Length: 222
Image 1 (cartoon, rainbow, N blue to C red):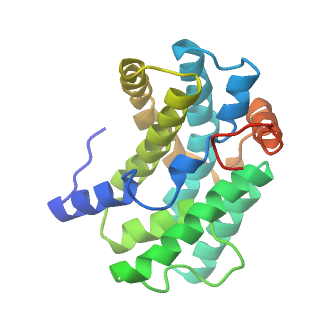
Image 2: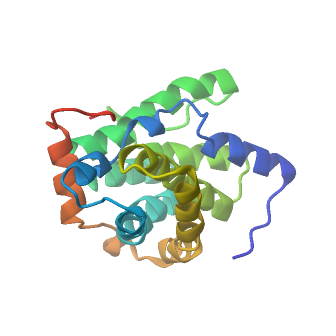
């Protein structure tokens, strides 16, 4: 996959997808903490399988196709629809909180960066849609925005696995190297997915996320 991006666009993308962006993505494990506690994820190989399944059957079928549509939306009604669709696709209260809390954080930050009136009024917003509209306003090209979002998700999840499994730093880098190969196919699938096919069903992820809400000890937010 070849992506052409200006220097300014690249710098903005790095800022938007950086772990130092204060939106709190590092605070959520998206069910991984419970999966580790019950032994579903316990090694480098099982971590790879857990994350690759989510990448292929959740990120590529929900977040990325919605981001693609939100980026290309031409009016507020389309943006609002993408916003509500993203939130409707969250299977648990915790997964929805991950999305809305990160959206709230970035929307609080953006006026200080010269970005106002990014999304139409709504009680809650989705981070994936906010990310798409910021990328569009900052002239980050569409494919780069998709890749940046996917990379930020992957980096946060590998960081969570590093703490929870736990994995060594070398294993974490190996996991990133292995899974980044799955990003370009996920992006291509997201851009060609029909609207009626947007959605995911990962029962183990939903169970892990729901159980994490009442897990006795937690490192990550619920």
